Amino acid sequence: MNLYGRQLTDEEIARGEHRQFVGGLWDELGRLQLDFLRSRGLLPGHRFVDVGCGALRGGVHFVAYLDPGRYHGLDINASLIEAGRRELAAAGLQGRDARLLVDDGFRVSRFGEHFDMGLALSLFTHLPMDAIVRCLKEVAAALAPDGVFYATHFDAPGPAWLEPVQHSPGGVCTNYDLDPFHQSVDEYEWMAGLCGLQVENIGDWAHPRAQRMLAFRHRRA
Image 1 (cartoon, rainbow, N blue to C red):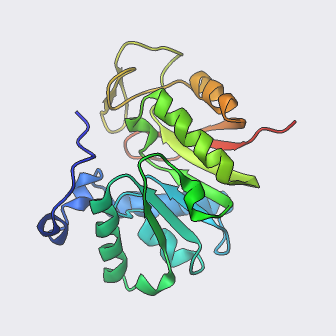
Image 2 (tube, rainbow, N blue to C red):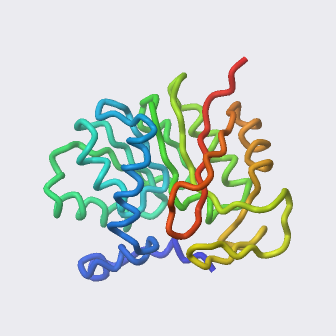
């Protein structure tokens, strides 16, 4: 059962329990996110949105790299946003004007920006397809004309793959209709099309638990 909605207490945050709550691998996955997006062209001046930012495992690295005011993080869990603020303060980054929002519907338009690049790491892996479509629809409305939105997923061998899938490395077992979820690239092409987007299957990007990477852009006429 997905317990992500549980609010951490101040004491739990002070003990650093938010780092395990969002999946652990705090330093490894935090750095991997920034390194990957820099390899894909992320620049300090870009407007960047981190959808499902959690406690800023990646956000701490992005805030340090991006120009002040360019990082925007959104998450449904208010206690994780608070933990992220404390992570920024501990890293001496509280003056870099990170924009953080609590939102339960992926409404990135609330930031009032059009984003050059965005990321959803380990978000779609916990969502059924109707929620993924909602996220893509909201992101599409706030994506700059030449912007790109990256998202990780657990791959399935084909559409409507009802059998469990064991992923290596990492040993995660995913399901069609239970968290953690898997979806095929064909299903992502369908979902992207509903939202006026096209999807590029990047695939392996060295994630330690075998999450694959996708890139979404506005569909060209």
